[in-house]
Length: 233
Image (cartoon, rainbow, N blue to C red; front, side):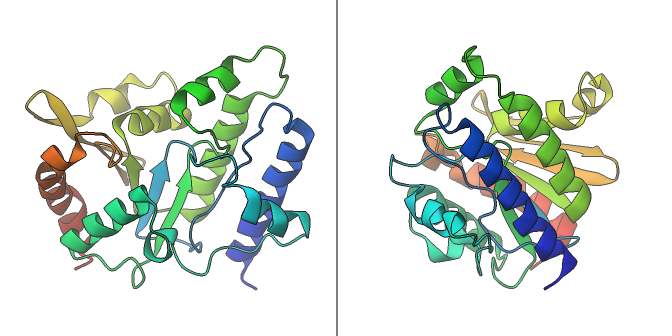
């Protein structure tokens, strides 16, 4: 087993142990990697946090509780058909980027599941819980990026982009001031910045209820600022 795979499985085990100690406050479980991992991947896709229903964690819980922390064999955007997976699969198809052929890793800024962002906000504000969700998430996402060293980070959602910048470069106005914003009809379609020789891109979240009306602009943005830059087609 490769050292990078060993590290990724060890991280999943660490998160599982942390969840076990705090599951009273984290009732919906967690998810870390949605794909195999690679050193120097072409793209690291970052969501904000996992969603799902009450039973979404059940398959992973059964696996983890038996000491199996193995990673998915393929990125979920190929193998699953939940709405975000379908949308992202279509986006990459339109870009001419093969999700299986290229080195693409998917994870989230925050690993712990909630049915909605409102539920996540309640978790973050829960004063009865001594577990510092944000510090834990910040530490792990910094570790993931340092370990994998992706060429490009693609953030699913504008809020994800800004949260990532806050995690990586707190109080660094230089990064934010260098961020280029692309708008259409007063809606932010995409963002990009460079930091430490890495491109960070954010797009309008594909789960946004009016995304279909802006999808062609998102594709145009990504063709210019992701596909051409990586030369993956």
